[in-house]
Length: 237
Image (tube, rainbow, N blue to C red; front, side, top):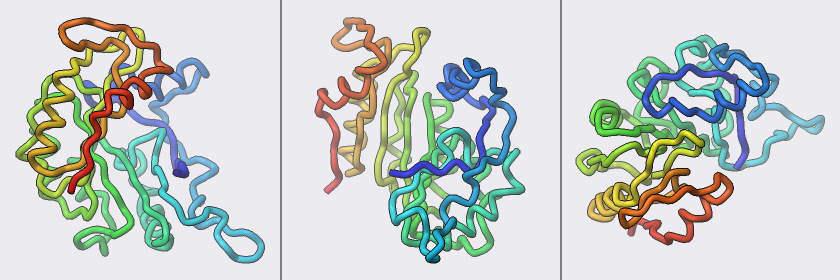
């Protein structure tokens, strides 16, 4: 996977943003995360070598790691990004967004039923956001859809929104002040995915984790490893 950050900076917009690691990291470096600015990597997908070939090889591209691709402050730059994405049809571009309600305002004129090489990941963290965002997401013209429930803050029923979803990713919050993740919530979503034949991935435990009514505190470096050890990922048939 290759990262492409055409701009950086974001604004908190939901409950899941409370302990955002991007904001925390920027604060340590005295950077104002709320300032959305273009980066020197803006044209990364189409930059070429002297021989005319692309510097970036065919790959999976994680778009906007340090921002939200649909954020309002980047509206003036996004169309150029779509043009680069279309040009690099040999790459698959994946982006997460907490602003799925802006999607139809942000797509190019030739989007139609979606680009084959774009994966859109809608993020939710509680039932309120799931009902609002996933009801929108379920109706959008996107060929490849993922749901990420990370940080998962409570038990969430999303089964009625899973038609057309390829994968659901679940994880907890990583912070000394992180909110609790209950393993039962994780298993509940897994069961929903199995019933709807949707792939499921347990990405990471939470720093504060409850399993079998016992509370654990897990070091950040072990969060993903402990999730893998649970061995509960599910691949759709």
